Length: 81
Image (cartoon, rainbow, N blue to C red):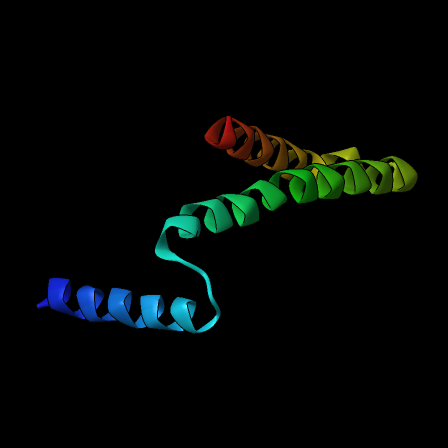
């Protein structure tokens, strides 16, 4: 039952993409492009938060979050390359 729902969803997405002139073979390139955008955005957010933490001199509050953001950025980096 779930397979048929996903199949109809897949066909619907293909029809939408055909309306915009995007072929199915370009879909992984588009998905990879948006996934690739998450890497610089994550790194920029990581640097901004590091500067904000240094400005506030409140290391204990944000240290766990810094480590988590670093792990996420590294994961996305190795996911892409």
